[in-house]
Length: 225
Image (cartoon, helix red, strand yellow):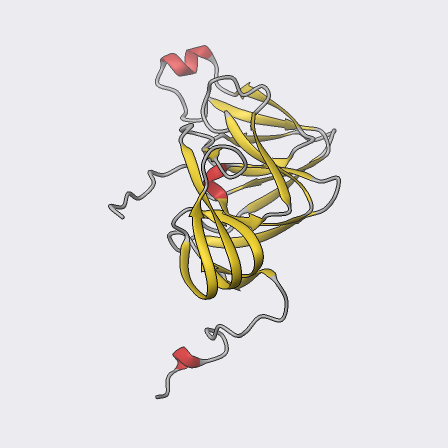
């Protein structure tokens, strides 16, 4: 059988080492030798001796979605083999976290991550009860985390001289050391006249970076599965 489908661009080759790599722009391949964690329902294929276990509360419990406060259930993948992960054909990116780093991520953008990483759910300082960012998951320690994003993300440097203001519905994650607070860019008079649609942003101050996606939050697809 012959087809461009069977070119090396699409072929899933055997891995040389454990851990995650990008299979392509829309999926991540993870070579498991022990344990890793992934978004529940995100496995699209696997080979080898692997077991998938739903995680309860605690270290795999729930990553809070920034906007809705809903939980993102995780699963542990254990054994030896290869597994492929994806979510709604969103773009995939891998972030390597080193000792001393801390990365605050919106739960809706987490695909999978190394079991060596430590994470905890934190309330975003200064976010109050408004919009995206009330809860985020903070990753630290060492290891890799795979993120998903609708479209290609924008990484914006933050410096003490140039704070950045981000839409709470568009933010993916940021350097945990940044100071966060709510910023109102719309006057009361404008709000009474119907508003601009850009009333409140999350203000980022300090030294680091913030990642945003090129769209505001859209309703998630539902599935009966």
